[in-house]
Amino acid sequence: MRLTLLRQAAFFPTRGRLAAVVRNFKQFSARRRNPLKRDGPLGMTRRMRRAHILGVAHYVPSRVVTNEDLSKIMPTSDDWIFQRSGIRERRFIEHSGIGASDLAVPACKQAVERAGRDLADVDAIVFATLSPDVMFPGSGVLLQNKLGLESVPALDVRNQCSGFLYGLSVANAWVQSGAYDNVLVVGSEVHSTGLDFTERGRAVAVLFGDGAGAALVGVSPDPEKGIRSVKLHSDGSGAEELWIPAPMSKNEPRITHEMLDQGLQYPHMNGKQVFRWAVEKMPEVAREVLADTGLTVADIDVFVPHQANLRINQFVAAALDIPEHKVVNNIGRFGNTTAATIPIGLSEAFEAGKLENATVLSAAFGSGYTWAGALIRF
Ligand SMILES: CC(C)(COP(=O)(O)OP(=O)(O)OC[C@H]1O[C@@H](n2cnc3c(N)ncnc32)[C@H](O)[C@@H]1OP(=O)(O)O)[C@@H](O)C(=O)NCCC(=O)NCCS
Image 1 (cartoon, rainbow, N blue to C red):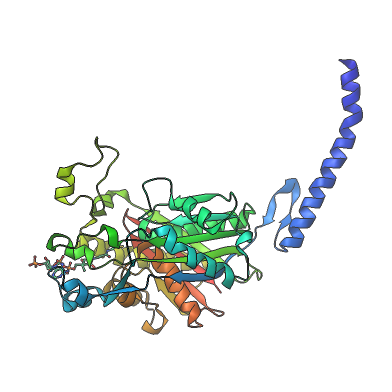
Image 2: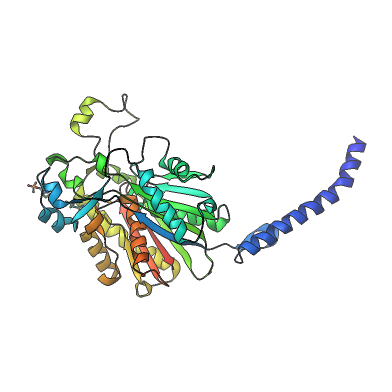
């Protein structure tokens, strides 16, 4: 026993010195990788890394479905759809067998390329969707496999229209903390296989489209630029105002012929109620991120709202006093692609050169209810 203690006493100083050398080396290399990271007493990070969207891209299927096309399969009209939602057309997958993870692949590859990175640099995935390829596993692991990323973690986010901003908040925290360096945040949806194209479902079926968007979130090379604030909210009292009730694990069996006959496998929405909440909560959360960053509406160059309805976005922009030319609205061409609307909007804004040195505000509201806002300086 005494011999062991003697050995330990002799060993400890050496082990302590060795640990200090290893610690110092790790801190030195972390600082080299990221000049923002400075370790204070007790190893506490005094100033965290700033995360940024380094690249953003989108992908939509080639099949264009116009309001006119829909009016051939159910009682609706271009007039009705356009007047109420601003939608003229949307994209649907070309054929059965294409899932949300498939649409995400080209969007992710391009986002990584635009970030000037390789797929091998990606060290985590956050996949937001309300239309996963299958009930389980999540679409994140399917995407991980399709991108050939070796064993990186894949997290699925189920926050519907706010899903991308929820995912962005996770990636932001991971990158800031140093847990991961390059996180793919994906929003991807295939709605067209799950809509009720009969008179019963027409109020919902005309609104949705398929598509994907992706952003690579990594360490901001410039401390002045990057994700400045992300705010998230939910209120489950509104869960049944916009939902797909079946299949449901609380019921045995999870789905019955009777449920199918009732159309419970399709989205059900209390449109007027959702509209009322959206026009209240989106400006509210937008003001919250502005207050958090000390900025005002006058500082905003580009507003990228979720695309549920053009009228909602016009209300929200008016409530915030954001002029129309600063608002990205593409619902006319894509419909509501839920978790994908914001990365698609960001990607189109990037392609139009609007993100360069821009201060960008984003806000979303959707099923849950969930709502979220973000402010990013490009
Ligand atoms: C869905 C929405 C466009 C419906 O607009 P609305 O003015 O509320 O329309 P209503 O549901 O009251 O329907 C009005 C009439 O049009 C009919 N109608 C519904 N869908 C129709 C369609 N696709 N084509 C033609 N007529 C339709 C209804 O049957 C109803 O007829 P009735 O008056 O004879 O009963 C609107 O409520 C909305 O945009 N809500 C928010 C949606 C949203 O944001 N969803 C996603 C959240 S992320």
